[in-house]
Image (cartoon, rainbow, N blue to C red; front, side, top):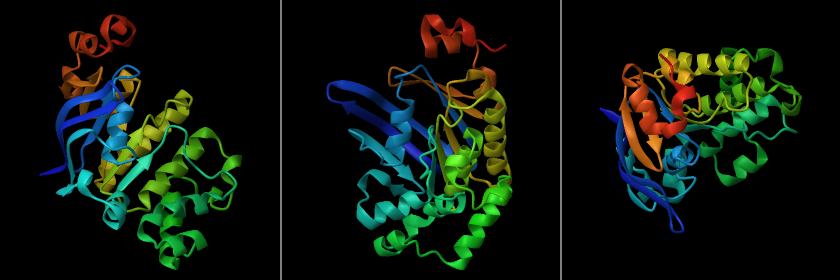
Length: 253
């Protein structure tokens, strides 16, 4: 059974078409990577799924709900079940690690409770447990502006996990990191998928990383989905279709 169903998804920015009739389904528990050159529609796809932007046409069904039709409290509740990890972390740096992680519970709070930071002891315990899972138990009360890039991204993952999501969307989560930190983040994402059964949909610039971690790859070019298959089928011809004439350096045998 599909957890996410995207059908004929189209997005315009003015007269420019960022996505064109994109259709695919993702099953519960899959690890799916999205690749493609800059401007191919990867980030637009992620943001449409999470309703950070509105699609121009098509449909998105998540856990049997029509995401594009939801408003207000119904949309907030649906978003609470979709974690989001950002390229530049999207943290409040003057706050501590645990305060940032607890922001993942805001989708379950009233506006007043959220503003006042009214979290239950159960939520606080859950936040600490998630930080332990991600190797950040020694940084619970550290301000986020004192962390390294890799540590900041792990805080972002922890914030997504306390939402109790069924799926986590990752928008280029390793593009700002050095290779060692990037590997740590990807290893944690794979562990989350394998051990917790959470579906992972991740945008990546690195073809070799996509092939190493994902069980399925979606390739985009100019807003079109031009490849959908396992890493084993991502050969030189397919990479050329995705990236064009500059694809030579991206070939992974």
